[in-house]
Length: 260
Image (cartoon, rainbow, N blue to C red):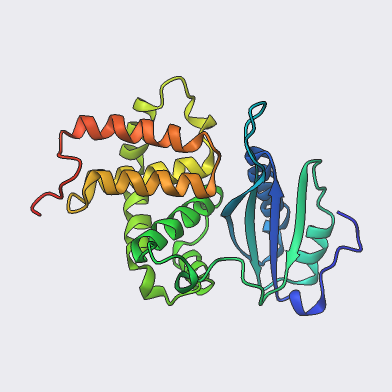
């Protein structure tokens, strides 16, 4: 990165970095590389968190839709050493990196969203974002990581109680959940599954396994909707296919909650 990178003095205590790329793999790798480059500077790193993807060029008869994929990294307690490490980072071709002002909203306030969205939907999105970050920083302290994450959400932490249940449940049951994903991800090596799609699948499978008070079709539809918003055009079919197969294995009425 050039040494004249626009990091103002007011942003040095807390730096927010937004990464954008048409290739989601490159965006994920760029985010992981930035985190690795500043990990030894004593700053706390929160992220990378997926932001909603953006349609750059709509689908036509001749080509597929083109989307850009965005990731957010928040660096807390940055020092001159942190800033220097970030400035020295090389930006790969095809990736855009921007410094976001500390007070600039990058996540939508649920109160300003369409009425059809609800607290559980927002919690599922939050859980997906945190699990994407956790996948990169599994060594990070969970208590501090959760505190930093929820401190930056547009609603108080208690609003996201369901998200915390999902996060803790997925991490607790991770081995079993990943075994189920691997079973149904036909023709896909586990390591090739997009990080966002993997987090979405883990959350939905946890719900199907442990939250029998939620009708399976609700968990699946929510997962597909989040994939449409945050991942690729193909992701909704991939996510739906795996979850639909697992739903059949469960043998539950897809539209009924057990005990309801």
